[in-house]
Length: 102
Image (cartoon, rainbow, N blue to C red; front, top):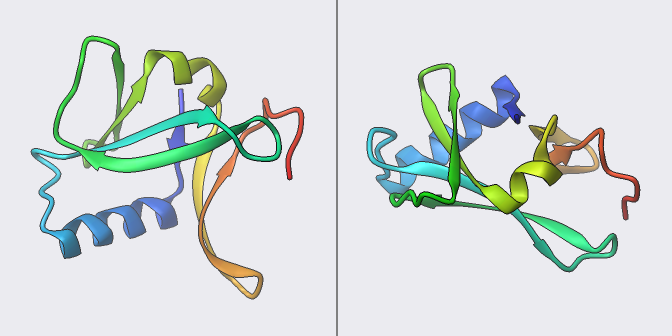
């Protein structure tokens, strides 16, 4: 499915804590939508609702990640990373299946 690096997990948990979103109730929802220079763009947000069209990934028993079923195929094998280097600070998706990038 997908993985989350230690740094990305730490930053996601910090954001949730700062926003008052307990991990017992809220999930990290990730997916893809049409758009972007390669035809798809990654999306992520926090959610407290799961539907039957969602897959759940447990990250080390600390965080639950929800992925809608249509996005699962695009995200399979993808890792969410966090970069704090000179080229910018933020989350980035590393997808070995992507045939084009911007």
